[in-house]
Image (cartoon, rainbow, N blue to C red; front, side):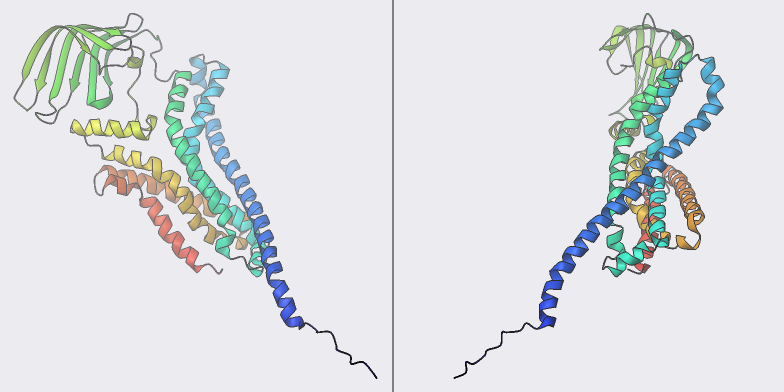
Length: 389
């Protein structure tokens, strides 16, 4: 009797190969995507770092050539001169970060486009939007760096000014017949300032008001003495309060301590802080004080908002540069440089236009500060949607 032979079950190749190919293909795309992310991110950061540091260094060389005789005349030590440029770096990097992101985006995307690497990525199932994700990460890092530099640069600039002796009297001990614009709309005048003794001769203090709740003040004294940590003690004078145009209340005093006049004698040798020398919070407090004095603060409000708008532009401008960079294969490196420089010039022109229309009150100052970012964002969004993914 012959035994029945039962053939072993045979798997259908099509079903078996499909089931095995799916997880293998997904893992392969994950490994490819991870390696590609590292490659794109590293290439972006290389160009970004060179540009963010290269532009300021070029400016430093130009500044040194133009002002070398002046610095030598002040007998500034070489170490202090070199250190002054280190302290100037935060401000210059803050201004150049959007351009650095644009250059890095154009050259990174342009290079992979010319070498058909982006085409190979698309063939592997990686879209253009997914491809530029590491550049988005890089731009977000640049935005965070820009926010930090915006807060760091005012203090760094103050140190730089001291190193270069920009805001001190050449004698360093006295100042005659001067006016000093302090914070809060206060203006100090004096016939003479003696730094070593901490004394003002014939000082006057004036502050504009805007009504009965915040009256104008005019104080005059025979002299004033500085008390460390307390303020200035004015002696033998009078205070005039002016809540209106014609109403004046006068009070004579033998001595009075002005705690809000807390500038040190050496501080009065220099001019008051400029908006660029204040951080975001300090500038906001200054704007509020000036508004109470009835001063037009449109330009100051624009400058304050630009401290946020310029770093955020780093993310927005890559949306504009990435789609255009895919066409750099037509002109190579020269096309990429021209595109980046042209866009940077347009951006800087828009910033100046922003300051003008916001400062004049044609539109709300805070809104005006976002005009360049909004324009680049809209154009970039349209270009991004037209890219073949």
